Amino acid sequence: MSGALLDQWPGAASCVLLRLRGGALERVHEEGDLHAVRPWASVTKMTVALAMGVEVDWEAHRYDERVGNDGTTLAHLLSHSSGLGLEASDRVRALGERRVYSNVGIDRAVEAVVGDADPSRWLARRVFEPLGMSSTSLRDRPSSGAWGSTNDLATLAVAWLRGDGVSLATRDRAITPYLPALSGVVPGWGRFTPCSWGLGPEVRGSKQHWMGDWRATSFGHFGQSGALLLANVDEEIAVVATSEVAFGPWAVALWPSWTTRVRELALA
Image 1 (cartoon, rainbow, N blue to C red):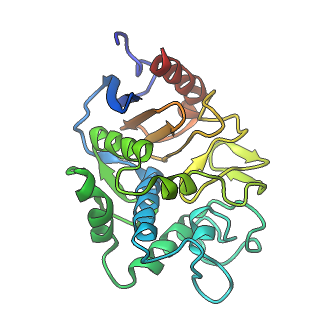
Image 2: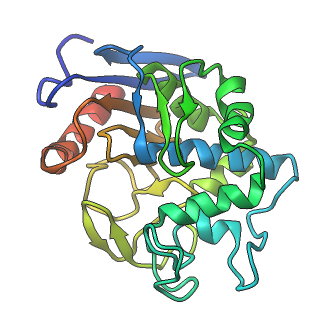
Image 3: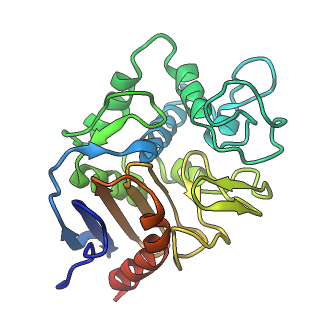
């Protein structure tokens, strides 16, 4: 494919547009420095969600497993329906009442699974090493601390498309809205009713925001670093991007039309 996709992105950025055709992977478009290691910020949650799927497939943990004594489960924490606040560990809503985006909830889910072990080694053994994501590592908290190349982020997107490392049943469960009627706020984009979210990945549903005109079943995540991952299993397409410019007004203005454009290109 000719032509630039990143000409309106500020600063240095990279992207890969992917499609599966008859089971064969096609890199429809790639642009920028695909080897530069950049922060993924909250796109890290897509690695945590995949690692949790591995735990479920191994029957080491269950999504309905309780964390603590208040009825909270791993599913509540992964889907931002535990009522925990963004960073504060105190509950700001009742359990299962509202979709409250919570970094600390994701961190708590990982802590419940790994215990005293190193979460960076857990992610490496469950996701990075099996998938060959050699440039990626967890440098900080599990909810937002991964750094890696755009090529590795593309590998992660393919894993979600094909179910690499997890069963298709578990993959499908993770990308299906959990407590689908809940309303909530997507940081940077506003309130939505409903605010669809799976067990880690955001699901587009009826939201009009960064996912543009992608199908309602599309899923993924973006990060405050300017990185994003967006995929659709039915159409067998995905796009990933990383940036050296943090998420801000430029992304709010650009991404809805940009993701719409890349979907059209992927399906052409």
